[in-house]
Length: 549
Image (cartoon, rainbow, N blue to C red; front, side, top):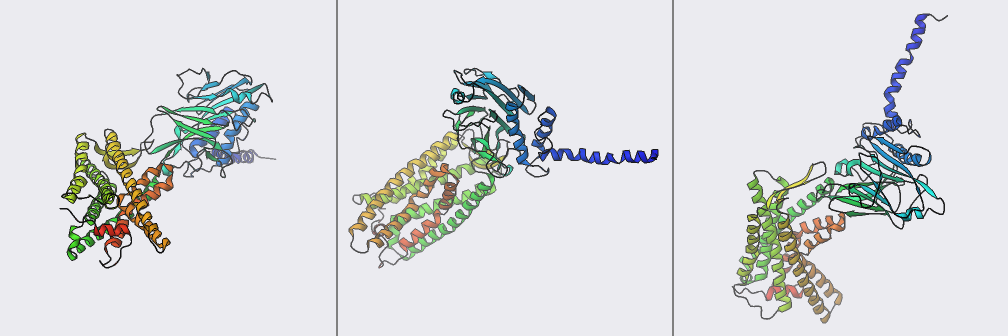
């Protein structure tokens, strides 16, 4: 016979176990097994809590694949196995409707994140967020059915790691815009390869200049848990939003990613600083080498070509020095100090551009024009242009109050880059005119001159008797050496929009320009006067550049 005390003990024993189960349930929910195939409001709300609990730090045990599959299957359930027409939860807005496959016009639906999606007319401007389904989508299904059941879903996935994939990382500030997914589903009817794509419009504010927007869909076949893919989707950026066009149905989103993430920016900064540091050392070698030659060779004092080379070396050295100060120290001090720092950096950048185009001009006189190249006080006039023209441009830019703190922030208002440069509000037009525009003009002139010089060099090498292959290699090396003087490596900046690899190439080659210039200077002027130079261009620089001062 069981005594009352023993009975009380038996009744109390299950209580710790029940408490343990209750404590573990949230963790089990995020493993994606408890609520599998259960889609009531309670189960939906419990699973939605995992959007916040499953963080990328890994504090909560989560099975992302199961959780993501749960929401994908939920759309199928709404179409195939549910009589529900609408779902209105804080994190989920869904509308399920029946449509004939024989419709006469496209269908339009609103995607307001705070309201259930509703069908709207084409000319409705009250709904900046909307989806358009082409009539051809339904027409393609007429052979198999006369009507379809359509689900439109707006899902808030929160800040966690669910539906983030490998392309979204807190470390590089990339994210799903507004943490919002848009789902379009016909249930188990698999729709791909649409001749006319569906169109989803996401409204948003203007994004920072270092961020890019990409239309993507959730691809369950990518990776172990699925990932975002842009295959079959196109992105059209507009003033107040982005239009996504995709040729299939699934979950869609707009990814906001930095053009250069923090890791990449740090790597590029390290490469640039290492290259600029090396260039500064070799530029000092170039200046010292030139000084020694001037003291040891009387004839060297009157040659203009080495003077131009050294002037470019000095301007490039000072530019690298200001780059180290600007990037290394940041905008420390008062606004006046930042203004001055931006102006000095701008001045030496323009000096480099100007002296590179003067190198090209001098090369044109030596190789292309050749005759009637006398100019009184030639190098003095070049110096007035090389150092004076940038000063005039900087004074004009500074008088318009264009210099100041330049800050790039991400969507969460976190600073990713801050330096003294052009003011981000008042100096943008000056930046495009005095830097981008001026560089393009000087680069185009230098490129044309280098092309003419290359044609001249290879024409001369083919006309000479002897080892043609050896002459060709000499010509190639000569052109490469001259390209470092006229700034061809700076032209790689034009190719940087093509991808991250071109950004690395630009940073690598451009930051080592001083090293290339020293090598060219050494090859050009180190041999004794009795030794034959490496090319016809080198001989012309040594024998036809007498100063006219």
